[in-house]
Image 1: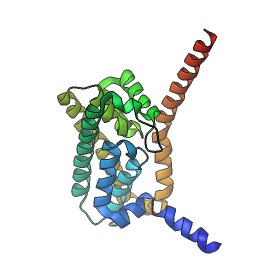
Image 2: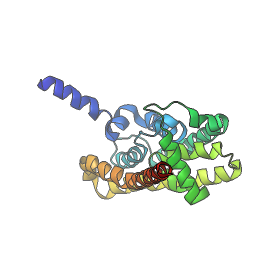
Image 3: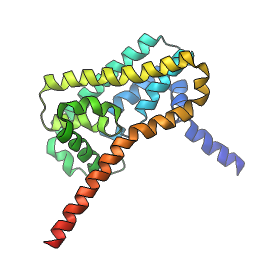
Amino acid sequence: MSEIWHSIQEFFAWFQPRSIIEYGGLLLLLTVVFIENGLFFGFFLPGDSLMFAAGLLCATGVLPHPFSVVISSVFIMAVIGNMFGYYFGRKTGPALYSRKESFFFRKSHLQIASEFYTKHGLKTLIIGRFLPVIRTFAPIVAGLINMHFGKFMLANILGAAAWVGSLVSLGYFLGNVWPDAEKNLGYIIIALIIITAIPVVRTYLKNRGKGQQAASAEGEN
């Protein structure tokens, strides 16, 4: 029984940011960033925590690449990922709303991103970079509504610069001033996930409440 439990622990340990970076290196990090920013099924990937961990592990020498190489390559991949999402949304159009739901695709995710567009407009592509689910579906919705490509690219670049620049730099800075932070990386990542998830959960609950109110109003009529 103890062997089985140990195997389970090892399996889930592989999916921790440090393990992903140690085993997959910069290439796997870039792959995750591209998928999370460009493909609708990448909404569950830990982009925030991976970039923060990459900066920290770069400072402590676990990731054997110069900081400039890490931050610039991640930035470029984030921009390319959003461009792919934009063209995907533009090509699929309204058909995406009629797509069959699965674990990898929920219409509610599309609705949450659309709600952010209604409230924040073009800023969604910048603000949404810091929010799980939103950063995956925001470029898709931008393509779906045929946003002008020039405006999209401006917000895409600014959002990628803010997102990548802040998280990778913060991790790198923390790794330099507090080398022991690497030992507490798991706790730091958990806190980061909770903080970034709060706005998305609030939006989801708000949309759910509106849907229930609309359903009740229809039932009364």
